Length: 180
Image (cartoon, rainbow, N blue to C red):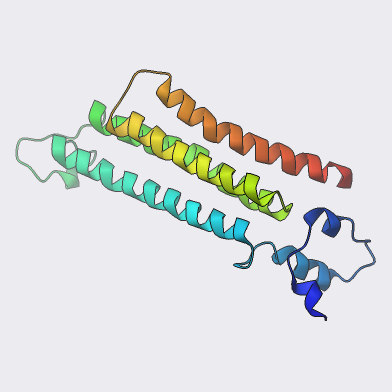
């Protein structure tokens, strides 16, 4: 196997490989997009790490709100005297809704971003999409869970990642349409 087959490739060229080509060679070329030599993949890894850390911090923020307002959903969690099991504290529920919204939006984004990398997009466009989507989610958390502000701040930050995820899904789908 020559060294040129190990280099990053144009995803569209890879998809045009005849079916009689070696499948191990195809797999090697495919995985060359998902390695640390690909700056688009590295950018995705960085911003994905930021988003995962943000989501993990939301769990801690929920716990902090529970202790701050002495609101616990289970009897065994009641640390303070004269407290009762509660489920609907608005301060805790706001953080929980923000966390759930993260999971509903960030997890599909991760999937589509990985698939988007596999079609070898423009590095500048892909990297900016990853940056903007991640920053939009951070802003969404700030205006939803930390410092609630009137709309449209939250919907704009939500829609930004939604639109980016939809764009990547559409681009991947359109690129793969010819293989159906």
